[in-house]
Amino acid sequence: MDTKSRLEKVMREVFDDEEISINDETTAEDIEEWDSLTHVELIVAVEEEFACKFSTVEVMKLKNVGEFIKLIDRKKTNA
Image (cartoon, rainbow, N blue to C red; front, side, top):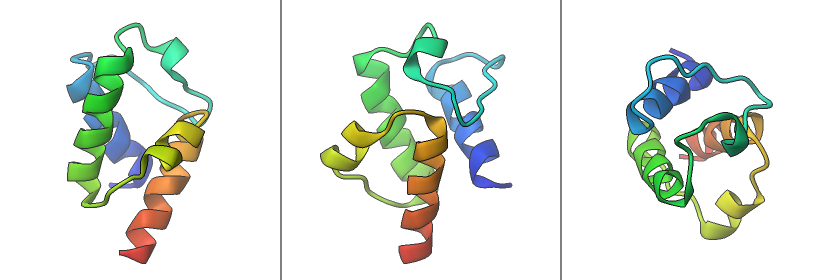
């Protein structure tokens, strides 16, 4: 399973919505349940799924799902 598919699976679990479909341009504005609390839950769940850690600065710089996927791939490559 590629990074995008794995991330989408995690997001469906965190937001409790099997209908979520993501693309590179997806942002928190596109998912109704995505608020500050679920954002933290999402980061933790992604760290667990991909066995990596993100700094606060890295997370704050993200503008969309595409950038998140690139960050995850960089972390996986450097692990």
